[in-house]
Image (cartoon, rainbow over all chains, first blue to last red; front, side, top):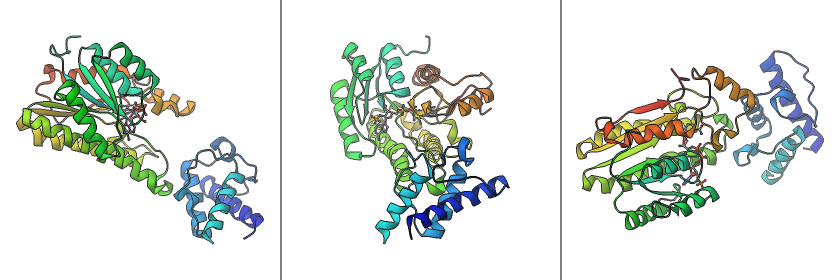
Length: 89
Length: 247
Ligand SMILES: NC(=O)c1ccc[n+]([C@@H]2O[C@H](COP(=O)([O-])OP(=O)(O)OC[C@H]3O[C@@H](n4cnc5c(N)ncnc54)[C@H](OP(=O)(O)O)[C@@H]3O)[C@@H](O)[C@H]2O)c1
C-alpha cells in the first residue's frame, strides 16, 4: 500500500468514527489535523474505536507496543502505521 | 495530635520518594516514628529530608516488580531499625487508557506493581509480624476501586483487589493481633493528578461536596489514627477520604 493510500484509509476511519459518534458526516479531517478533542472531536473511546477499526482493515495495531504519547497530528498516526506495516511484511 | 502513639514504631512505607508517600514519611517522622522507605529511584526531596533526620528515616532502592529486591529491602530495614511494626503499602503506578486499546504490557505492569508486588511485600513483612503476634498493615487504595471511572480499568482492578485483600487478611491475621485496613483517597494534589486537564479538574471540584481536591495531609491524619491504639478495634475496613465525592 502506498503512503497516500494509507493516509486515505486512516482519514476515512477517523471520519466514519466521528460520523458515528456525532451523527454528522463530512467532518473536515486532513493529514495535518491535530488529534486533541477540541480540534478533531474524538474522545479516548472514539480513538479506541478508530484503532480497533484500523486493525480490522489493515491487520495492524501499532498501539499494541507503542504509546499514544507524543502523537500530535494525523500524520504522526500514519507514520506509526506505516512503520508497523513495513515491519510486518 | 491525640491519636499519635506514645511509643515509636518502625514503619515501612513503599514508594516514599515523592507524592503521598513522601508526605506519609514526613508525617510519621514528625510523629516520632522510625521510617524506612523504598522506591525505584531516590528523589532530591527525600534525600534532603533524610539529611535532616538521618537517625529516623532511611531509603533503599527497591522495585515492587522485582520480588528479590523486596526481600533485600525488608532484611536491610530489620538490621537497621529492628522488626517492622507497621507496613504502609503506598507505592503504585497508574496507566490510563481505554482498555480495549491499552498495551498489554501496560496492563500487566500495573497489576504486577500495584497488586502482585504489594502482596509479595505484605507476605514477607507479615510472616515476621505473625511470629511477634502483633502488627499493622495499611493499604493505600483509591475511590476508583469502589466507583467506576472510565480509562482506569486495570488500575481500578488493582485498587479493588487491594481492598478485597485487606478484608481477607484482616480475617487471616486478626487472631495473631495484626490489623489490616485500607485508606481510599479521592483525587489528591500529587504528581499522579498533575496530568488532569483543567476542565476535568473543575468538574471534580464541582462534584465534591467539600469543594476541593484532597491534600496529602488529609490522608496522613487518617493513617496516624489507624496506626494508633485508638484504632485498636478497627480491622478489615476501608476508610474513604474524598471530600464526599463518592457519597
Ligand atoms: N494522587 C491521587 O490523586 C491518588 C488518589 C487516590 C489514591 N492514590 C494512591 O496513593 C498512592 C500514592 O500515589 P501518588 O499520587 O503519591 O503517586 P506518585 O506521586 O506517582 O508516587 C508513587 C510512588 O510509588 C513509587 N513506585 C512506583 N512504582 C514503584 C515500583 N515498581 N517499586 C517501588 N516503588 C514504586 C514511586 O517511586 P519510583 O517511581 O521511584 O519507583 C513513588 O515514590 C498510590 O497507591 C495511589 O494509587 C493517589
